[in-house]
Each structure stands twice: as structure tokens, then as C-alpha cells.
Length: 524
Image 1: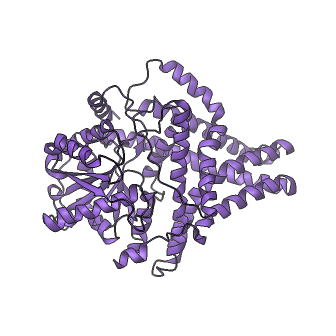
Image 2: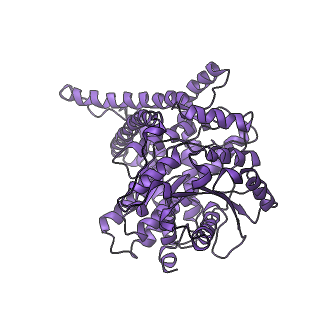
Image 3: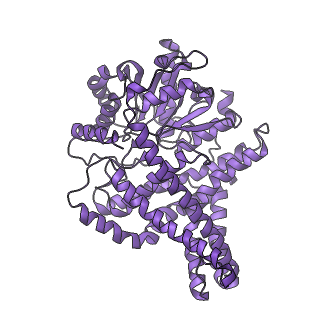
């Protein structure tokens, strides 16, 4: 397809565009280290401005996180019978919409897949309107037998359960979720549209991780937003992803950072000024997926990349709309405390590999001159900004703190004279708000978590409170270093190999877990 050739990513890992994040990251780190001795006061003032920016950004996000919790609760408590059936301006009725859910799987435990399918079966009108695709990998021994067993168990609970088998070692592909999902989506289009004759204009397709559990009202709301949107074929839909399924079984560092990530998702989706990007488990129209040539099989971090692919294909007219009903997922786990932390680091490294998107945007810059320069530049800055913060923010703050200690000037105190005491008080107030916001996330996520707290919860809370003193070390180890690690590997032209994140089922029993989780969802 012409669209695929124009939108494809450069597969050479040594291409100069992939070196951009690493060059910038190491330039910032090296200049900051040199600045401690060469120009300490300049570095200190730069860090003052940067720290203030981070605090303002953080406080704004936590504010919208709190707003989002109330909005989610209000929406989830609204009875379904009060939500009328909708008809689009073009006459498309809500009951005509069909939803396809693709589950790309590779060596996933049967209990985890059953849990996800059980939750999907709880969606309204699932037997008539929900198609589930078990996207298996040929590389997995016994994959077809596993899929057929699941189809036998669940086929009568959905409109259909389709099985796809992604061939191994196809040219130009990298093993991972993106290549599997691209293969499965093409099979869906052939089977449902070309063979069965279902209109592609009435189909949504959702990317679903094997451990993701949708809120029981998700697809009903997706159908309503789909038919009422005049731009339905240029939209992604995203629910806030919260890592709650097994949150009380993972190590405290994993739990604290997972709480922060969950809060970030909620705040970003509620903030009207944020530039939203799809993450992990999301939806779009099958027509949009088909028009952009589906997911790029040469990309591992496929969620943001699919948005960028669509952005360029549709000349910048792409947007992510929010569905404020929580999707629950697993926090990273492993066989034992140490193995869990190692797996968490590897997962963060894989996520940080999304910095390749910076290179992809640079590659596309000259191909689409009909997209305004400011919009292309803004997109580049948006993606580069987030990945650069990931790999360098910690170094700037810590090195700035070293300089402030040596020179006796606190990082977040700008003003010394009595005439500027009000401004100084405002800065200190902002610092206090940042600390309060951190505690608010911890407490809010503990109470928002839709799974039972451990019986020894007072001890768990005490351990978490103590762990706050280790946050600088935790963020260095599990945020900054994976980001810098990934960008350094890209700088030297290395390629990330696919690694399957383990998704064990740490709860007592699948049926009880799903029943309790969905019941708690209704109280969020």
C-alpha cells in the first residue's frame, strides 16, 4: 500500500534520527556535571527554573487527578437505564456498532486469559456486538490448541471468538505486540468485512493487553461516543489505565511508581489542555486502522506509534477522546521480590524504547509539508519532551541540589530581600503543594484500588510511608536509568529484542477475582 510505504518507520537501528534522544540526554548530563565546577550559579538558576516547572506541572496533574476521580465516580454510578440510545448525525445507530477486541498473546497463562475474557463477557450485549480475537503467535508451542480451548469455553458468550496465528520470522517484522496486532487486524478485516459483509464503518477495534480488565460499561460508552462523534474516523478512545489487579502483591517500589503512573493517566485524560496519546489498551475505528495500514510490524512500542502514524496519515487531524471508566491492569511481577524488581526494570526499559518515536517524527517531517510546521514541531516537542524528562530530570534536580548545598541557596527559594517576601512565600507554598500532592496520590490510589487490601494493611501502609524516604533512589533506579539505558542503546545503533512481561495470576481464584473486581468498579 502507498500509505504503508509513506508511513513506515526506518528499520535501520543505526539511522541518525534514533540518536537524537541519546545525544540530547548525554549532553544535558555531561554539561550539568561540568557545570558544578565551571558555572555553578548558572546551573543553579537553570535548575531553579526547571524544578519550578516540574512542580507546577506535577501539581496541575494531581489537581486534575482528583477532579478525574470524582468525574469517574459520578459517571460510573449513573444507571445504565438513564443512558438513552444515540443516533449519529449521519443516521448511524448505536445498536449497529460492533466492537472487535484484539488480545495479542504470547505464552500467556490460561488463567490470565480466562480472567480477561470473563470480564469482557460482562460487557452489555456482548453476545451480539462483541467480537474477541485471540491473536496467537506461531512461535508459541501449542498456541492453536490453547486458543481453540478458550474459544470452546467462551464462544457462546460473544458474537464470535476469532483465532489468528501470526507467522514467525516474516521479513521486516520485529517480534512483539505491534506485529502480532497488525496481522490480526488484517485478518479481522478480511473475515468480518470482506467475507461476512459487515460494514467497516460500523466496527471499532480495541487493542487489549492480556491482563487488561475493562470497566463493564466501557463498550457501551465507546458505542455512544462513536456514533455521536462527527470525527469518529479520526479518533482514538482511551480509558485511564490503573495497575491495580495485583498491586498488593508487588514490591513497594513497584507499587509506588505504579500508583504514580495510574494517577498520571487519570490526570492527563481529564486535563483539557493536555496532548493525549493512547496507551496500552485503547480503541479506534477499524476504518482508521485500515486507512493507515494498521500497526507498524517493525515497532515494539506500538501505542504512541499508532497515534503518530495516524497523525501523519490524516494530516494532523487526530485526537484522543477520554472514556472515564477505569481499565485495570497488572503491575509488573515476578518469581520473588528481586525477580519482580528486575522484571519491572526490563518493562520500563521496553517502555523507554518508545523514544524511537522521536526519530520517527524526524523522518516524517519532510514527507508531509501540507501539515503546518508549527504542528509538526509541536508534536516533535511533545514526544521529545516526555522522553527527555524521563532520562534527565533526576540528574538535573540532584546535581542542582548539590550546587545549592555547596552555595547555601535552596533550589526552590529565589528571593532573599524583604521586598520580595510574598513571591518567596509563593514558591515555598508551591513546594508544599508538591509534597502534599505526592501524599494525595498515595492515599487516593490506596482507596481507589478495586481489589481487597491485605489483612496486614497497617503494616503495609507503614512500609509505604518509610519507602517515601527512598523515592530519589527508586526513581533513579526504575525511571531515569531505564530511560537513559534505552536512549544510550539507540545512540549506538542497537535494537531492543522482544521480552514478554510475565502476567501471572496472584489472586486466589479467577471467578471470585473478576466478580469482586467488577463489583468494586461500580463503586469507584
